[in-house]
Length: 482
Image (cartoon, rainbow, N blue to C red):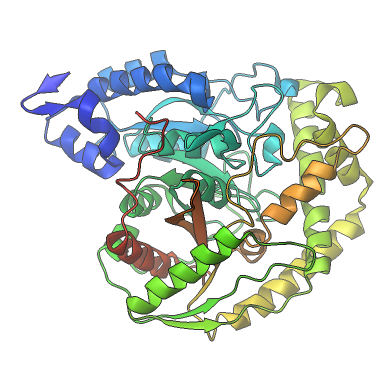
């Protein structure tokens, strides 16, 4: 696997997807060489990480040897999360035994766009059952382990994807986000994770939206420019979409190359009552604020004022109803009847809670979330960005959210306390990102969270690229790495 002085096995681990695509275009490396190198890495490191749960090696080899489209990432290896987006001919399980070994008979619109970009999917990544938790520890597949410390969680629900990118298996991987599921694992694994604006990427053909717009799809990436270029390749409405995000003024990859004007950045570290933010997360946020100030931005201590207790209650209603809908959706598709023995106790408890909610309960919750969105939008009329910790703690030990017998929702409730900052942007639809700027004394990554105005990924990409240049995380390597 050598051409000239370039050795795929030695150098692939250090390159982002944009650089790999340039090598393919320059014929310095062939797609099949990248695929074979990635397979070797997965086979060697996945036993320690449990990041990939459905290998797709034969399909990847077939695609790599064929005529690839002339896309922005032609020939680059990629991993797909085992949730939301079907890939025709591949297993889709949502991390649940209930789906068995269901094989998708079509591609999602997003998968079609990933294929047109030239990406080669080598497998599906681990996710908690029905993507419920902020840690990836499904009973069906077992836990994904953090490459910085394999006794710690990788975050969730896109934990398998984040661990795979952090460990150098692939330069970027698909991720979804309902309440922080791109940003939480990005923070836990020390990679870049941007949640795009609501409806920036399409969810068709199976869905118009999911859970009234809380769910979005994108990726976790090694570099900022990969995230921007990938969003360029996938963004935009599909025919029949119920709504879509405002079109960007120009390509997102062009924003990465543009320095931001001086920004007014609100900063806060306070969590809702009853939630304690770890000193490492507070320190990382203040450090990020200081770095932004050094780069010429104005930092003010401020935060949107919302009724957190009411907000948590209505989010809980919307999410639990969404889980109940998702399970019933699959029950109908598979011709099966949901029963307590088919799911993890926590999933079944959330399902029952969702089934108990009434139609008026759901609509009242949506109305409240829309009122909160308007209040938060007014806050962003005075501030360009809002900086907080991404999560309340550095990566916690595996099993930290295991519920005791007789109280299946205990872990679910504790999980929400670990991520009090991220879900608001799913409510409002705003873009937000976790940036890996800090590591604590234990060598664990501690991400910081920036939220932007609705439709304004451009400002986030500009600042992220500036931060990446000022304090690059690309040279950091976890103990488990390719």
